[in-house]
Length: 132
Image 1 (spheres, rainbow, N blue to C red):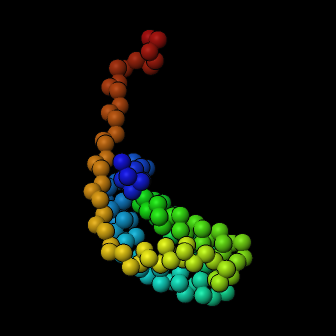
Image 2 (image 1 turned 180 degrees about the horizontal axis):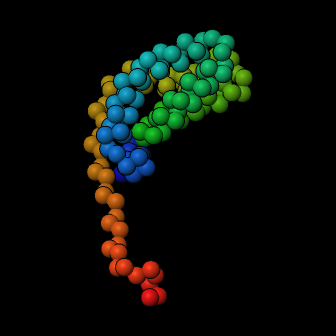
Image 3 (image 1 turned 30 degrees about the vertical axis):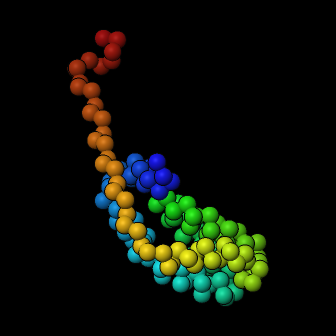
């Protein structure tokens, strides 16, 4: 099972509602290009706090949908920003990886697993405890 599939299965299990996860994935994919453009602008500026927050947001949401490459790239950039390195000191290969995300074709979200029905509670027997 791929990282993406595993993450999505876990996400569905945690949330318990496939439609919520489907909406999250659709929103993630729809917003990805704009997030990359925003990060490019932030990395060129001096607002390291806003840059770190934006990177953390992308890192977290990427982890939720199983975007391992995006997680690794954004984590490296975020750590560099948090250490106070300026834009020129950031690893250009890491920047290239994250900016390449915006140029990749948007993949269709994989089908999500069905949510199992909650277990049926045991029938009441009228007894107060099993010792009666």
